[in-house]
Image (cartoon, rainbow, N blue to C red; front, side):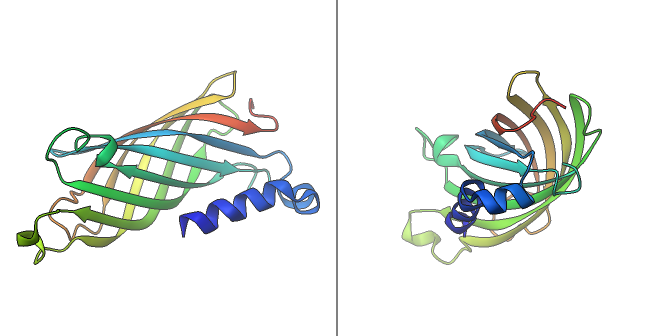
Amino acid sequence: MIKQLIGLLILLLLMPEIKAQFIDNYELGIGTRFQKTEQLYWENGVGADFTSDFLLKKKVHLKMSYATSRLGSAFSSNAIKQDNYLIGVDWRFRTKKCLQVFAGLNTGYFHADMEEPMFNVLPHNSLLLSAETGLVYKFKFPMSVSLSAGYNLITTPGSLFPVFYQMSVFYTLGKNHVN
């Protein structure tokens, strides 16, 4: 699913007719994501954030990310290797300012690789549904940083805790980044 979304985004950016009609004055942020689950693991990865004037004058942001404990707490330890694949939508407030506030919903897929056969009876996979809110600071140069807190509404596997915090750092491609 993530591969299809990336392909669609690249297709939209490369097709001049569609780009001129729907994605004029767009911003595409690409970068890193650092996530800390309350009382548990660090999960780090990559993410993307897209908006354009077509999306209610950049008030709506479409995003996707991949975060894993393999690049965090499980990098050189025996922590559970878990992966989060997310897509989401945010509503931005104060879009003309450098410091913006956002609220959003995310959905996706969670997988925990417990490795040992004795844990096969435990759930390893789950759909994800989370609410998130936070702050984004857009610098004068093409970079932004966001800090947020979220709550997983579905926490089926034992290593998927409800509360998480995250920081994302994005390099922004596109037109008219500075508002």
